[in-house]
Length: 283
Image 1 (tube, rainbow, N blue to C red):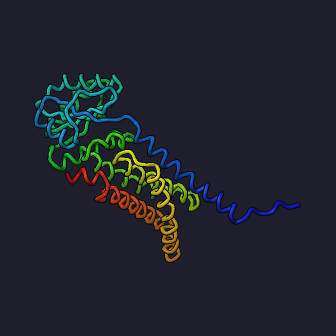
Image 2 (cartoon, rainbow, N blue to C red; image 1 turned 120 degrees about the vertical axis):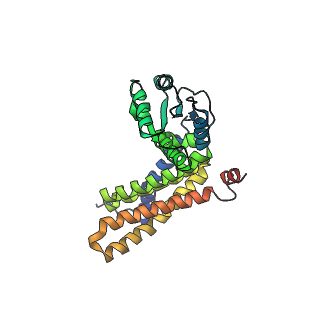
Image 3 (spheres, helix red, strand yellow; image 1 turned 135 degrees about the vertical axis):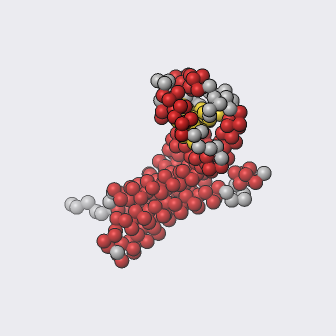
């Protein structure tokens, strides 16, 4: 006797569970990433003005580093290059990380990079060249710090308003690019669930930058992302029907734009007048 087909309700439950898995995983992974111990410390490399500029740019005090800190310092012509390089190498050997803003003319930056290269535990990979520590240079430095922190950026940026802003922009921009790439490289069915999970993770990361978030709020955001997914999918279908030859490009473009929109909404929610982060920035 043939087995009866599953009921509509049962199929709906199975589909809901299947689609809910990436959302739940996204929220859990975001919470784990935010719970990682990560912090940034600013080191005085011998130039008080440059050190003060780095401290202001990152919203972090000048202090002795903890072993697993990311040390950030400004290496200028006033610094004792050999001494600074040795101190930074000690931090690397202790298990921490280092990012050096090499400031000055092209000739001065070359000399500083050579001093870093001479330390086998450093190398040129820790150097970040900057001509000036002005407003534009400070923004470039914040972006470099966020890139250097990688998965630890959310945890580290919680304690710094300047880093939070750069981290938020980086999370949204990277999420949108990943969404476009996933859509280009995978089929429509495969990319749909992956993309929804990616957007949910991005929204959760943006929320976690403001501090520990209640699980109910994160779950609500994830459900909102899932409910919005059919809208952008229908938009992509309509555009590809009109321009079938451009299907991959259209789908990638819609995924990029939809993910940016999710990031924008998540960011605006965190900056609403009722949110603690907004009150902190206004005070």
